Image (tube, rainbow, N blue to C red; front, side, top):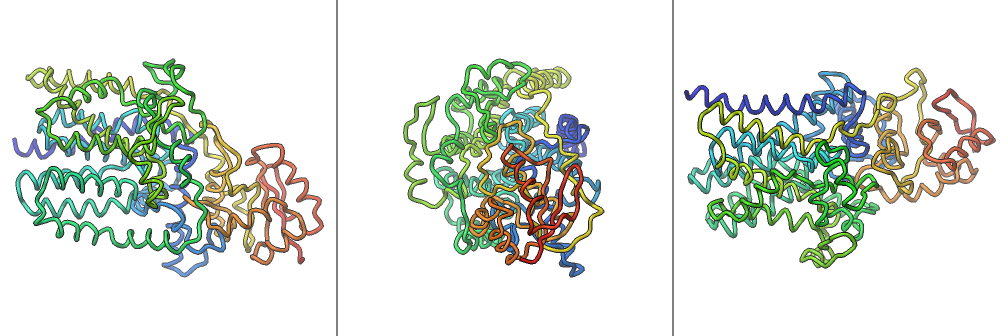
Length: 550
């Protein structure tokens, strides 16, 4: 009997992995990616880590994006943990599209098993624990943020809280240290969730745990584990000269949830295909993330749990933390908004650059509601094993159908993953065109290529041709990159080419298949006619020009 119990976590994890593996299989089978922005960032930064590792081991020159910047990972929220997992899958399958597929499949399965373990603190019932984990990881909200997956990786968050509250329950110090160690590791995967975890632990400690004799030991271990990344972010925040367009209060407001977002499913939802008409249309690509629907099953049973005095207060505290953070600086409904308690904090404390997309905190609500929904559902389940299994399957199936859009939004990427001119050999710094570092060309949710992700595609190609490029992006732009954009905008003006030549640019590559508008099409005509450029290579996809001596 004990052996069978020990197998339950493995059985649960395997079932989660198979469910999400089958759901996400539509991406690689269609040579597609699950997102059009941060998915590209995950691929390009992970491949950059891999190149840096190669360079460290054999001393070879492998170039860099965002030249002349030496460490592009400083200009955003780094996720070396996710990069490591991606690299392992890349080495196994040899393909970026399949590596991303296995990364998100593993990640969603780990999210589910993490919530599964956390739910065991409130009711140890394998069927209900499995259901709670599935509710959490499989929700419409998590699928709406599939492009942002590294920022929605909650495995360590769930385990850290599990061990912390387990320590409160049984007073074994090992659980306290497990919580601190696992919690400290969270920052290597997502600084967002690390901050959410620190806030949750602080509030739970003050209002629920109240054992301050062990607090400093806990904090010491927690921050000792996370210290390298904490120092990395502090150094970046203090010393790097960056342009951060996302810290603007209005941008932060648009990245927070409004009341009606909580009931807005993704397009192509199987049960509510026309519900979009009831809500403001959110076409611009970041707004797709605001589809925060969790399904009527989770919302209904979860809210019932909120008012159930028998359910432990820890879950309700986590729910409130998530809701307050996710609503951001204003409480919004359509065009009406009133200031929230966070408005003053956003205006006075420099947290904007780290919490610039408040809606991500709604994951804490999803976690809490998923577990409370499971607890409420448990009251209606039959006791015999097979009847209970059948009932759980019905709840899981109903939840799945009302949360999953079909087909999932896909972005064809086979023609964009690989550097288009593998056979062309040259040495020298490259400027890829078209290029718009300010991201002034806005994108819709369905756009495969737009100004910002085009820079990420250039970054990924750099890891293949291994020459320096001026192009690239991370969470923020170096100020030097924005300043050089004014010269890029007037290429091939002689003065601009002179400045670029001084930086070290030797080649300009125009990518015909990445043109976004008629104005960008005119760039190629000007390049072709320029007396300062020599035509180096030309085909249907690209034109390569070499700078003459100026």
